[in-house]
Image (cartoon, rainbow, N blue to C red; front, side):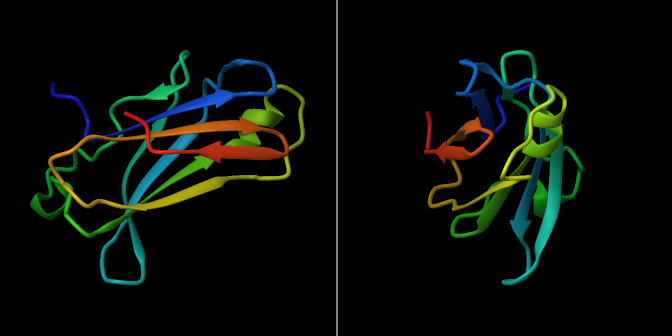
Length: 122
């Protein structure tokens, strides 16, 4: 299996460890306004979700599209609740545009109960 064109990595900066078990949702803007679900995943023990792209078999969803908006949603509240912590952000949504569909898009997320940071990774 080839590498997914969209991957993510979640680190819990408040404890200095990967955030395992974070649910992740990938969507794309299908009609100019509404987002459509493409795939779901869960971060592994290293905080990574490396197969975050659809395997639905639908031709229109089988490849990245230049200029299309994509959104990754990380469900952080259940993750923090799992360790008895509260969080100000119940989820984190990161919307990004794909300029070149043949490139890889890695979305790192650093979280703590009261802050988050992201950037385009490699």
